[in-house]
Amino acid sequence: MAEHRIFAMPFASVYPHYVTKVERKGRTVAELHEVITWLTGYDEAGIAAAVADDRSFRTFFADAPAMHPAAVSISGMICGIRVEEIEDPLMQQIRWMDKLVDELAKGKPMAKVLRWEVPAAS
Image (cartoon, rainbow, N blue to C red; front, side, top):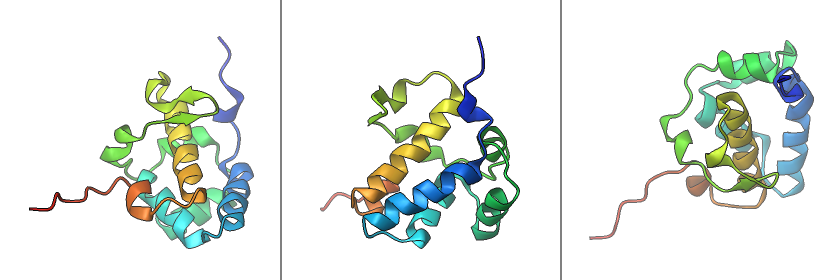
């Protein structure tokens, strides 16, 4: 079976679409970077390098400093597919990113986007 073409697509070719999507909905690039950092562990310099050097999505995720352990809690639909049911690990990581960017653009509070646990009231 042929590899999905998005795996070889440069992260830099999709990144501007993420920026446009969140800014169009009143969110900031700083918030987008917070989401990317939370998911992948890349800092500002790492994100800038990934955009500048045209690394593929495969390399972007393979070189991610630290995928967040709570990423497995990302659920819901993206492109008509439930992200928690995606079997290919790389495709799931890509769709996790898409899902987080969608949630940010839809105006969800950052605490919900980043899956922060809110302690129960006593």
